[in-house]
Length: 265
Image (tube, rainbow, N blue to C red; front, top):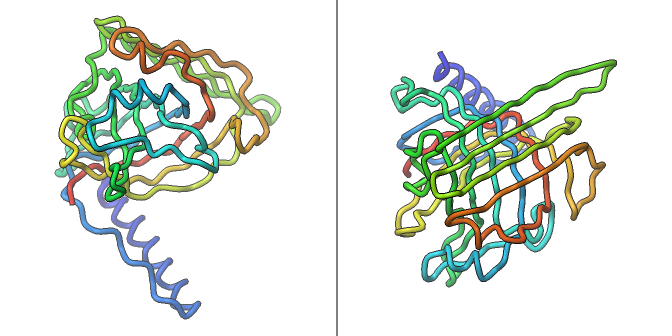
């Protein structure tokens, strides 16, 4: 049923886009290239854009690669993202559940580029997962010794409120703890294809194709109305201690809808 819905949804969207383009006298947009699908999931995410020490980050990247930190826009100066993920309905190419069919992850993802400018994308440099066998993680996730998530939403007299509490720990002392209370707002639709390179062998990459909405609840660059009421973050320890020491949050982004397909070209 989910695959049928996706086919109808994306097919309808493509036909509408083509019809609009023809009405304007322009050629319709090219369809995305086909993927050999490995995994699909529907997710809720909360993403923190961070700035961490350049030297500590460089040590985590393979030779010939460097940070692709944005110099403008909402992600300005962000060279690392700490992303909390509640993944449900995880299925394989046959549309059957993979493993438990669900996972909770705290991941560290960096925008990167090849030093000669010939390739750009992202690398997952670490994280903690209930199920460490995630395709685009390339084995970098630590198995969670404990993983807890509590999320709640309420509305009173027309005012909405959401609370997130995430708590991940690994055996080596690595930990990610986030507490957040915020009022949700209008979210921007986005998505597309992103290459995720293997940090151990960057000649290998997978493509994550997403459709998502992003609600920027606080941002130090674009300064939208600040809707974060409570916030605390503890992250680091073990192999992530140096990387996350002095990490500075720059953007607080809720992604209540995140549909993800991972595959190879």
